[in-house]
Length: 221
Image (cartoon, rainbow, N blue to C red):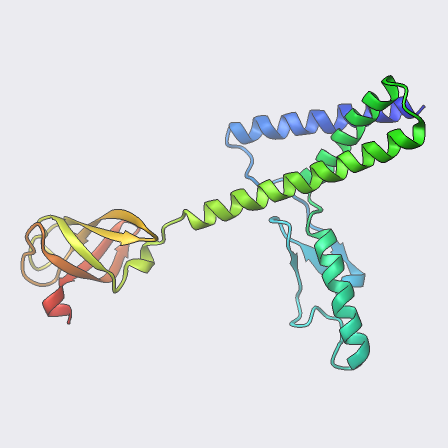
């Protein structure tokens, strides 16, 4: 009976994991696109967002700590512990737990381990894999967020004219500006006089997704 449970978990969990991986490779599923929302009344209607973090509608998590000072403090500790636990509960991590629980359980049963030992090892392996997947997802999300260059941050930054910029917004040139330790190249216009290649300028406005307005440093100053 126990072997059938392990087999069922391994098949279901493994199949879903393989499907998720295939969809991700085909670009049909984001890193957290399959995560579910978790609602718990005990946490003040807390919800688990797609990236595995708890979101609270109220400023104090709806725990009413201001009405009961001591109880609010204790509830804060309980909430922190619950947040840490529920922070790893996403669809992918749960599926990973089921898959590894089943696989390791099948291995232990086939090897003739005692049932209790098999269950303990299977549960432990499932938990480790669950936390491992959540760590990798958060790491990937952080790297993706850190690697995104926002053109809005270019405003006020110095730049170098890469291709001559025509005067009076009559045409486009190009500038290079360092953002987030990366050299970015944007189309550029200026409402002032022509800016030859090599001129040091300041970005004064963002005109589009990859276009900025610039002025010579002397004029901007």
